[in-house]
Image (cartoon, rainbow, N blue to C red; front, side, top):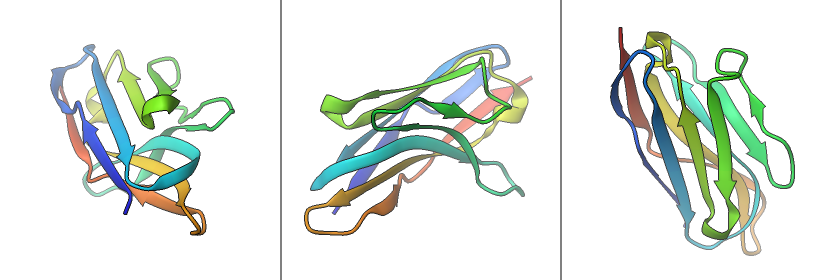
Length: 120
């Protein structure tokens, strides 16, 4: 069983910063990509940033220049550094891992979500 444990959400004023982290545990043997999605009330879940193994990060246009995604592969952990936060960044942020367990096909795994609220 693969588990994704997220932390780092909270309440921050506009212009402030937060760092989210997500650690993947369990018998995951191969990771293709790690990333973050978010979902605001009444809206669809959207990609925030993703970083494939051995590749370059991709960001949603709305967060380019403000958010940075990075990984610690030794710890199977992905981080999202969020700077210059805006009220429209308020959402539940979900960690995403695409990978595989031993002898199992590649699958998508999701964290439980962490709330980020940016006050104006």
